[in-house]
Image (cartoon, rainbow, N blue to C red):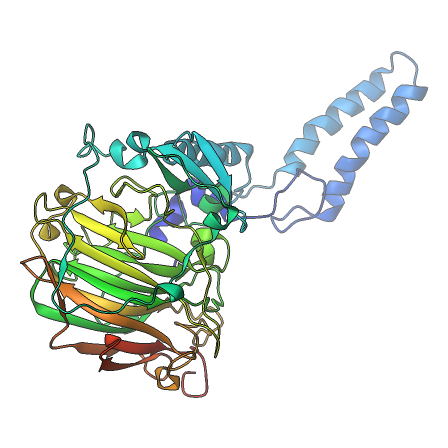
Length: 462
């Protein structure tokens, strides 16, 4: 994820991204304070201590000398440069802003569960979740489950291959009437470029993403009215080679143009060291109404998505994960528009309703979607001057097939009649097929499916 120039003037950004703390005149540094000057200042207190033990009570000449030294020392301590970024006021401002933001997004729990991966999962009363801080949602009451889309052609679901979440391995659950929320820490925010951009995707959005640092291997359908989408997504733990990069596999429900009015609803899994501080694949959601500019966020890091379930923590690690040439695991995801109230609901796994995005949060998606997209995405920062080695999917190309390449299966869309239908007129896009590619197929068991991914940097992807 690239840092944006607008963040460079943010006091938080300046303080948070400098890791060396200076003390005045204790060590030579790079700001022009010579070693000899510091040595003179370090001797001053020693001289005062020595003379205070041996001098007579009043020595006017020594007092004059001491006054002269103390008046000169501060000037020698502070060279005439304006680039000091380690003043205590900046540190205090940073901490105040971070802690104030944490207080806004971390609601008081009735119970906290320690996950094996180190996460803290807070069980927050449903009506106190962050979503209801949004002006459009104040006073809103969580709705009952909607009518589920009908399947015209039933597809087989392999329940044994489904992944769930690592925190649930503890055996503890959140009480009824609460929702599980991954607690955000100071460290999570400090890894971001600024508080303003914490939990948000970069602003640059292009359909052909080859120039934005984002690379995709996806299939998509457009040219119709869509009211939802469903797929089972193979879960891996791809290697991410740079702190500011990520690797994700998701589906997008899209309306509007790829400009300032883009509306998206997104769900899948991602590995993002910057957002989470580790390399676990995590269940995530995202939404925006203005092409990632000022609205929306990942997971529950801003007001918007209303969670209704006490079993699924958005942003928590998924377990188990697939391994090369061994057993494969996937997660079933479905997003669809409730015919009665018009809200966009999210299902995780087999019939587990997570919650919904209220329709009045959107402009174009208030009515329907105009595109549905499935696949992988990575960020390529080229931080070492060449293409990243961040993996997509399993880190292997699509042609390697089952147990080796990552897959999406049972791809479907929801029509105006709240029915699940197979995809028609499918398009493919691989921004750099020598780095990450895609192969689509169909079968009676998997319906419409595809393999995708790749290793990133290789002989054909310099």
